[in-house]
View 1 (cartoon, each protein chain N blue to C red):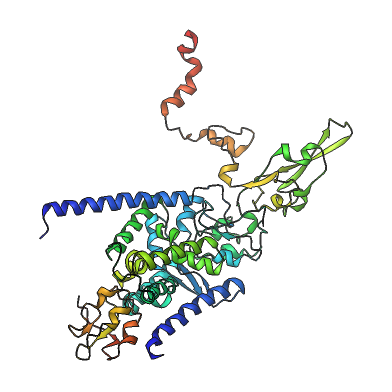
View 2: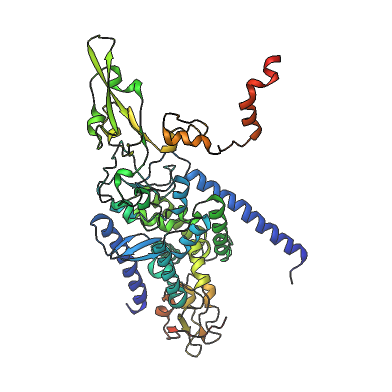
Length: 258
Length: 265
């Protein structure tokens, strides 16, 4: 028969093991997957869901014919054993038969993500990320003719188009400026690999790192569908008072008194 | 040769599985693809590790039906038939830890444990892994599993995997006898718990036993042999990996593979 002291000691040990062990373990997991600038294979769920779902079997990596996909190792800062790719090394070539997504057994890569309405899954629906241009290191923006990314883009003239602009410096040349269209860009990264700059001036970032969000309270009055939203209830922020005061602030006496 | 018949067979099976995985990655063979957490046979039959799936479910994701069915299939096979035989017949870490176990014997690296660790630790780690999975939203053991890392080291040439495997090898060799497989690994703990009433068990015959202790010498789960020399019965503990080492070293035929159909504790 265990004494009370023994029982209490045991419970204490158990609590220390569960609490301490859990924190260390959880901390290790978090540290191991700290990078959220990671590009996943086509059809991947949102990063948080993806990390839950991926069973780390590597079948997508095996299926990839271009050796684009790699499995993360400890030290990569990407959850150990999960697939990712670095387009500057090898980009995604957007295989039309989508072998990586198709091979995923767990649902972490989901063909539904590549399917719009009832069409068949189409690799061009993938949103791995979005290409972003750093103008200051882009030769085209210097006024030098380059077009490397534009020509390499598998969706030439759709995902990347060229804007013409007068080169004020020379007064007689045109600048051919690459522009990325986020509604078309798949984030495949072929442009990033093609960029001639020493460190790519066009590069793919995960969507949540490369896109903004205007918020529901801005409406495009010139678009019929959007204009209709004016009758809908607008989602209020966390702090209702803030919204109210923002609407009323011009009528507020405080402003006049100040 | 007779003394190593099961050992050789086990190694052949373990290495064949690795070989098929390797061929799947490098030559596109379709016999077996994936890893020990989730694999597919001949591009049609899914097999999944029920413990990995349990962690994924705990983290809050309902995994695909093919993975769920694959996990159920494997679960039933081990629960009803095989017991904990994954550990000694399939798992590649077993080759590493068996080597450490063997070298301990050969070089007489102290037989008594330097640190005293309960063999029940793995069950606490098992419970903790599910709590951590749920709290941190990620399959907790899968992300640090040396089994998966060894697989990746061999199949994908991941360098970091080897260092983890090396650490476990040296812990097993110098610090704790059967440390990984016998004390820590929660996957082993999982199969110990669920495989207790499986049909395939080692059976002991007290009448033939001469108390030579050869079986204790080779067993990585020594406590499971508690009845040897005392009573004739099955080795009932779920911790027994059905590796068959005790059977092959026994000169008295006092141990043999057998089928158990009762459900005694």
